[in-house]
Length: 240
Image 1 (cartoon, one colour):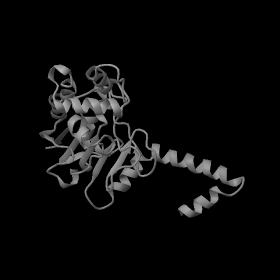
Image 2: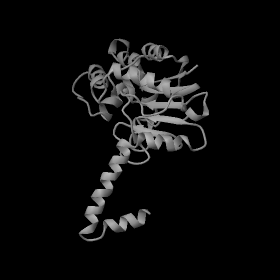
Image 3: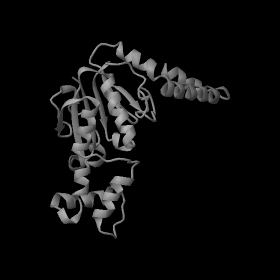
Image 4: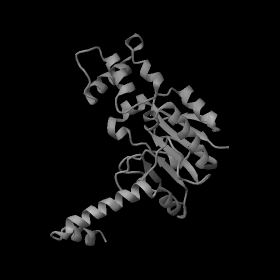
């Protein structure tokens, strides 16, 4: 099928029109076919797993969604609105370095929707920058670990190198990358509890008591293991 479509694209005069129609249909499906794709996914055998903020790739075996899906099988989902998904349909929900891109009201809504679409006994796993560690980057409480992270962040994010690094890096974590609200453990855990989650526990990135949630994070592939372990807060919660 892919070879046939590629051949059509190369037909003189006719090819560009076919390609434009194909791209339009593709965008239509990615942006408006989420409910249909979810029904199709939920009919397949296996554990039901929802991935929020999948970016351009997604995780094998998960129903992958993103606000700006780039290609199949990632479907469009705005986490600040009602998910086009049925109640109690999934056993696991996972989101990595995404909730901090939402305003606080949007984050509340996202967590509530995660609770709704999870089946009883299901688990949500959220990974996000840790506000407590961010504020401890100030020189008054710096350690060698902090200094290594500050130096890495200046290089990796191309921040001003002619100023003391703590204020520059802290402001970058608050305001760059589209961040809107940074959570510490207490605040994120409270948000989960208010939504109805119980048995909330902190996890090391990549580790979980659930086999389906082990090794799902990929942010360390972008920033490195040491930086990711330093800045990332991971919480899991269970739906009773």
